[in-house]
Image (cartoon, rainbow, N blue to C red; front, side, top):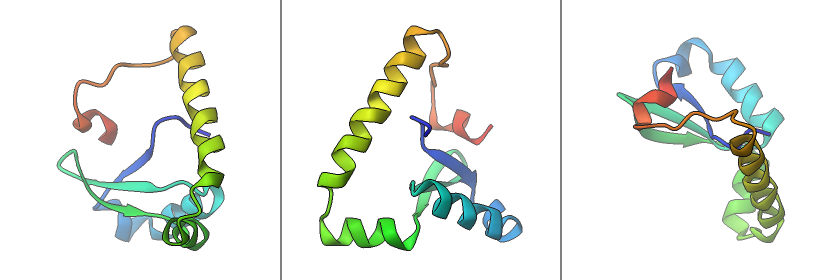
Length: 91
């Protein structure tokens, strides 16, 4: 799992539709669709959507804590890059 959200430019949604959908289903993570470096929409698989709608976020607490720990470990190991703006996520 990646501590940073997965992002795609909005223009890729039409060209890479199947790949983006498969990524959302495989990772069960929200995918941010970016336009001009700004988040424009969020894509998620149906299971994740249903959990969000049902308010079943207690399942996500453990996951978020795990992601935070992974991010901290990456930071300590020098494997992270500080982002100065959202534009850098489109790279």
